[in-house]
Each structure stands twice: as structure tokens, then as C-alpha cells.
Length: 357
Image 1 (cartoon, rainbow, N blue to C red):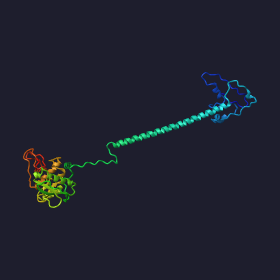
Image 2: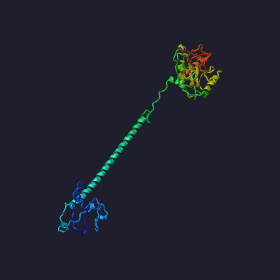
Image 3: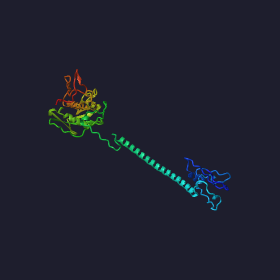
Image 4: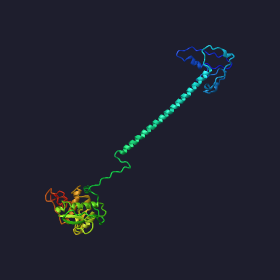
């Protein structure tokens, strides 16, 4: 491209370019002939140009010089080529380019803000979705059969009488208690019409066993039709005060031995119970009541019934006996805590005086 003439130079005669197939249009090139906004100008030798100031935007912001004189001179030379764009058209072209650049920049900024807004919305949506998923997992984890902090655990159903009677309870084989007793409060009326026996239930202090369960077991066992109340011959009533016919006493092994010794009986050899006939007490060894015996194994319910019937049988006047035939039920007055076999005869455990009834 040609530059602007220096001072004193000859007239500016635009040079005509031949048309080039496929090249830029001639009128487009001529419009930017004199001032190229995209290329830095080189001044002619000895000329001073306002575009050497280093301002990159000078060609865009510079206004056109004063109009040429209409009185002839250099400016009166007629053009010999295609007409160039008017000075006003050149300024409008520059202004349009600047406006387009500003519009493009604004469009980029707005697009960026919209994109940022969409990105923030997407991030918030992903965060919310993630939090919802975590809440769902937490809720599912808490709900899988495992109760929450505020959920009350269901209460276990209380054990039945039979279940309590069939359980073993902790108690030492060599325990010696305080020797002091508490009478179990309450009264259980005799249910039958036979000869009535009254009794009291005492439990040694500090055993940690269920005294009420023990008292209930005594009343139920003695008045069972298979027990000493058979055929209405007897009936048993539990009292809390007054003068009973006997006192059924649940005591530690050491205390049991002391009371049995008062009647000349040694219970320490096999850690057993006794009827201390010279006293008012029928002694039930708490270790046997809690833990049973090898002869009965895990049949705790039946073993406890046997203990009560055997020792009360002594109070009623019955002595020890054994079974006579292999495979027969052991009589309730056999020492079943100690043995079920004797003289080559194998007896079967039996808690009742009249088991067939």
C-alpha cells in the first residue's frame, strides 16, 4: 500500500490495480488505500508522521484533516482511476469497525457470564444431588434394622414360670452366706381338702436368687396331684407369720451344712440338701437349686421339683429307697442328686412320689 505524501510533494494520483481473479474486490481495497488500520505506516524519507507516536489506536481515533481548497491547485487534478471512498465514508467505516469490535467484546462478556451462571447452577444442582444421595444413604443405613438414637428398643417379653424354672443361675459351690433369713411375704391358700400342712418360706440374705420364684415353686410342687397331695390326702398352705408346721429354707452350702449338722447330718461330702429333723427347717442347698446335678443334666425344672418333694418327704416321715429293676423310675426318696445307678441297676430320673397320676 502507498503512504500519505510528505509536505511539498506532488499531487496524489491513485494507482489503478488490475483486477485479480479470486482476490479482494477493488472498491474494498481502495476504501483502505490511504489509511490501513491494520498495518503500521512507514513515513517517507524526511517526513514527520503523526503515526510515529507509538499510539496503536491513532489510526482509529484520528480525525480527517481540513478539507482541501476548492480554488484549484493540486487538488484540482481529475482522478484517472476508480473513485476512492469519500472522507466521510472512511470515518464511518472506522466507526463501524470500532462499534463491531465493542459489540463483539460485549457479546463475549455476556456469553461468559451466562456460561458462568450455568456452571454455577450446574454445580449447585450437582451439590444438591450429592447431598440428597448422601441423605438417602444415611437414611437407608439407619433404617436397615438398626434403630435410630431416639427409637426406643422393644422390651423383652418376661420369662414364663416354666422358663425360669428351667434355667441355671450363678452360685458358688463353696459359698457360705450370712446365716440370716428373710421370710417371703404373702400367703398361698391350701387348694385341697386333705390334711392341711402350713409352712413358711425363708431365703438366706445375699444369695441373689429369686425368692418369689422359689416360694411359687414350693406351693405348686407340693399341691400337684403327682406330689404328696395325691388323691386329696394332703394340702399345703404357705403362711408368712405365726407357727408353721415346718420352714422350707433356701440357704448357701455353708449355712445348709450348719443347720443339717444340728440334726447329725453331713451335707458337705456331696454338697446336698437335708431335712434337719431336730429343727423346724427343711434345708434346700442353694447351690443345687441354682446349678442342679450331673444326674439330671440340664433338666433343671424336674430336678427342682425332685429337691422339694424329696426333702419334704423326709419331713412327712419317708426314708431313703432305691429302684428295684433296671430302667424303672427312681423313687422320689432315692438320693437322685448322688446317683441313679446302684448294684448294676440303672434307674431313670423322677421328681414325683406318684408319677403315673
